[in-house]
Image (cartoon, rainbow, N blue to C red; front, side, top):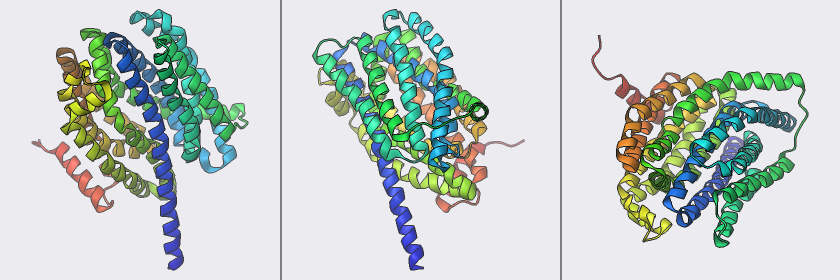
Length: 439
């Protein structure tokens, strides 16, 4: 019994250490992105910052395609069973990433021409290539639960990016082209560091073909889910920019950037829950996967909730501290409150989404995202067009609440006999969706 207790204590310590390094890594990524956006918001005009926001939304959309077809299959695969298998999977994933560049790079110029900034197309193309290369390497490390090693390259990429952008601003050279070249170069440097940490392995044509088939089998549903997710997130920036002008889009990005202070917790949940719960599922089935997902999920929610409540209570203070007391963004207190509420729903829904993703229940994830996309089109889009930043934040709140309810309802059939806290929560969500007259 004592030996079992020692083993459990050691396992618990290892899990806590893994969770800490996961949070540290995502904290580095989110902090670098956050600082970059704050620096640009304070130095660019609202219209220029809005154009940057639209470009950023386009880049994130292109990265969503890569994430769906390459990153998700890599993260949930059994490649981490041995270092050599992981290196082979990383090499194959890099080759699949390169295969995506042709269609992605063909789409970006069309978007750049549409927003009238052709001069920034070349550096934007470089960002796509370098960003996705580095993302593949860091995710391969995470698939092997090597988050501690991933921190160093990510710090170089994202904190280095923020420092370089600050230096550009000090030198009076913070044009969008220079900013994008900076993002590309820091990503490339980080990819080199993580390549040295991980190494690349041999991959045969047969193995590459199997990786591609597996990626498409899973990724097509994940891609459909993420496209639906775009309809309830990036679409708001596009709609506000198209119908109310780039300055309004810049204001919406300013709100999203403040909410992004919670991204270290939010994304670290996904980075940790998906591979960890996927491994638990292979070892012990859906119940073991949920225990792992909920263990990390409730910790993340417990840390995020007080921060979001403070942000909802004192939105003007947060805006003044970040953008300056004379900034035009200080008047966005009401949208900020709606955004904070939207993120509360987002955090809880993230646990269900990651759990379903870890089980490779891609069709269920697709249904969750389709509901969010439908709410985004039916309610969020008209609100964003009609009321600008405030309407977009209200729409985001409705989208995330819908995703939370759908994720809980679709997880419930897998967890009817689960631990009490999970069963009670899921039963309540399921009953709320099924309430109403019966024929």
